[in-house]
Each structure stands twice: as structure tokens, then as C-alpha cells.
Image (cartoon, rainbow, N blue to C red; front, side, top):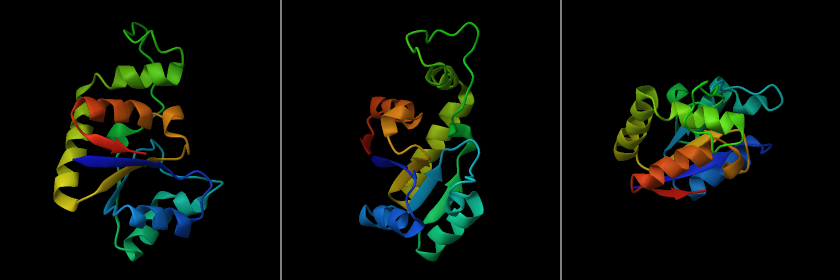
Length: 144
């Protein structure tokens, strides 16, 4: 199984969707906690879903994999100096995270090639890096 990651960054919508099409993506899993952008309204949940649907790509918001998690006071993930990554690492220990990942697997089997998306262009500066590491530990090939 293979899963892609992508950040919408400052792209225009046509270039973004073309990138997905070039990689055969059939479903975009939005892993932003708040699926909107004031600066780039083409990536607001409704506008994005409509644009993707018009080009034959399914959209789904995955709040259970959203970022911006606060670290636990008793976090075991103290190797992460960045508080937001530490918070996400803590969240990855929850049942909710694991259910979200299992849903990703189910949808990949059902819908075909899938990409997880957030706003950050650089995957290793985003919680997609932690999701990717988890996916790799489960034997999934991750493409950035």
C-alpha cells in the first residue's frame, strides 16, 4: 500500500489538482484541524471539495488526524523539543489517532490512491512527518 502527503502551500487550485492527478490520487484526506484558509480561500473545505469533485477526486476531512495538539503535562515524548510535535506525538498514543489511521487504510483499499494534505509545503515541518513515520512503521510506502 502507498500513501502520498502534500501541502497546499501557496499553490493555485489548478496546479494543486494537477499534481494530484499526475500521481493518480483518487481521494484527498485533509488532515488540517481547521480546514480553511483566509489567505488561500481555494483551500477552504467547501471550495476545495467542489474543485476536487469536478475533477473526479474525492475529498474527506480527517479531523481525527488533525494537527495542533497540545503536549500532555506528563508527556513521554520529551525528545521532541518542538511543543507542537511533542503534542502530536502524545496524541498519536490515543485510540482516536489509531482509528483515524485505520480509516485511511480502509479508504485506500476502497477508493484507491490517497494523499493526506495539510497547509505546510515542507512535509518534515508539519505533523504529516509524524503521520508518515507511523505509516512507515506499519509497512506503508509514503511518498512526499
